[in-house]
Image (cartoon, rainbow, N blue to C red):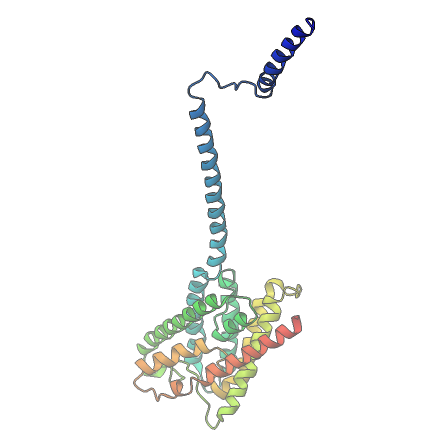
Amino acid sequence: MKASVPHALLFCILGNGLPALVATAEAPPSPLEGFPEADEAISLVQIGLHTSAANATTAAELAAATAAAPAAAADFDMKASVAEFLAQALFVFVGCGSAMSIAKAPGSAWVLQVALTFGIAITVLAYTIGHYSGGQMNGAVTLGLVIVGHITVVQGIGNLVAQLLGSLLGATMLWFVYSGMPAASLDQTGGLGTNTLGDGVPMISALIGEIAGTFLLMYVVLETAVNSANTAVGSMAPLAIGFAVFLAHSVLISLDGCSINPTRTTGPAIINAILNPKSDGKALQQLWIFWVGPCVGAALAAGVYKGMTA
């Protein structure tokens, strides 16, 4: 019994001290103990981590917004519309000016000259501004390109407005150029090259002719300048488009002066009605024909193209 007392005492000591030793072993002293700034330093580190996370979120949002900006800007290109404005003004000045200078002159091949002038003008100007806007210069062509999705609706509206303003400018320049000439050299068309029905030409004949002529032009544009599968044409597309304009004019000039281009027709019709005291108003009265016909023709060509490329 005496021998068991020391063992019991040792057991009690070990029993009472062992948990403390185990706790000490399981929780080693912090390396930051003894430094009064330790807690403050930890807090600063935590704040820094939160700030970095917030900055990362902001940067991600900014990157997303920046990526979305070009997509929105791509819906409209001001340079393209400016190019359409300039080209349309020059196209009206050259094309209608050619008709004004020689139309119905005795002994002249004036139909051939005017048709060639319109066709060559389209080719030259398409090569000139094609890298900005594609060289449309025609509200009906712009409509067709919107229908097939080649340009956006916003860009199409911008180009159409620019073309109308350019047509007004071109017709105004023609008026001031020809109004100062001697009587014998005045406008041979009598109306700034405006489009009106020829003598005895039924309205339905002109309407069908405008639909067919614009269909030809629009389909050539789509298959040569838009269809990527047509690798044989390449940079020759403006030449093919110019020939299409020439062919349509060769057929339609004697019927209604050949429009196949509502924006080209609108400017001279408006300026002639405003500035020409001898205007009979026919150009404005019949203007709807030269909008409906070309737009229907362009829409039909766009539908056929979509069907062919589906």
